[in-house]
Length: 215
Image 1 (tube, rainbow, N blue to C red):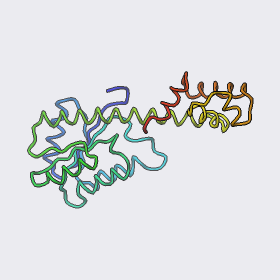
Image 2: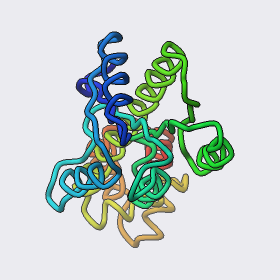
Image 3: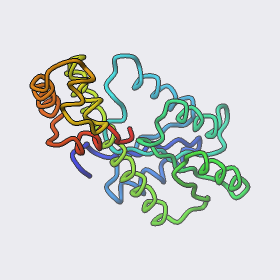
């Protein structure tokens, strides 16, 4: 699954037997997992991994299998925390629900959850959805990596290069850029070339598309 590292599935369910069964099922499809007996336990992991100065997390494709109802902090409260931390794109959530929780789970999907699966669940159908969630996570991680690269490139630009870039992206020709910034056309050409080099693009259209990418 790209070069992002091994996928990981986080199992958050208060029932040991459920976590063990899920871990075995995922191992049968060569997927790694890590279990948590409560939302609080998973929240401690979040605090550790997202501490100031810690590397971006998750670094590899990941998803959460999350029980709706648990003693203490519910799965829904933990889900809201993941939303607040803006983790859902890179850490998709699949809710595990009882029949009575289906309306709640449907509402969670509208809020950004990847899916919900009713207990008892079909093994193959569940793992298929997990694999789809992991692929979605990988795509989001690649978008995040691309955005970080763009930000690194932008940080290398001088103030004047940023001024020129902004007008280039607007589609202005060099002569009008020179007039607007009160510099020579030759100076505009030099700055324009440096912007293209630092941003690793070959045209104004490519530069505009790069800067318009969501992320």
